[in-house]
Length: 193
Image (cartoon, rainbow, N blue to C red; front, side, top):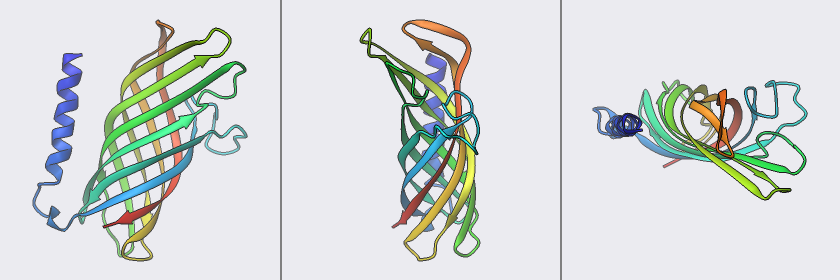
């Protein structure tokens, strides 16, 4: 656990340093609310396309972009993540710090991202009134496209993959070979200031 704290501290420090690097004097801050759905892996939707049980994922990212690079903190929440199982409710929350490679081509910014953070899974059984919460240290990777038809407001579409570093634990029982992982397709608005 001590190694993970040091590793996470190093990543947070590196993300902070990107804001002090030369050339970031022209960085623009942004806020981007998002809405999407989870797919693949442990989510209730097995594929990106053709899924009838799409569960909504909502969130917001806050960050900054320079001419080529950027960083962001993204917080998201998905209700009923594991599907509509009778007498059970579930959710997954993610808090990720990401570094972005986002070159600008006029009003268009394609981007790739990678980051580390927290993935928190919660399962509650209504018949037994038992609840299980498991915090995971994990990583995400993805990419997308931002388009800015105006100077301050744009739109964003992306696909990300999330993966936990350790096995899922429910009601105190560790499930072997069950590292929480899933993808997310999302779209949002981007406000620059």
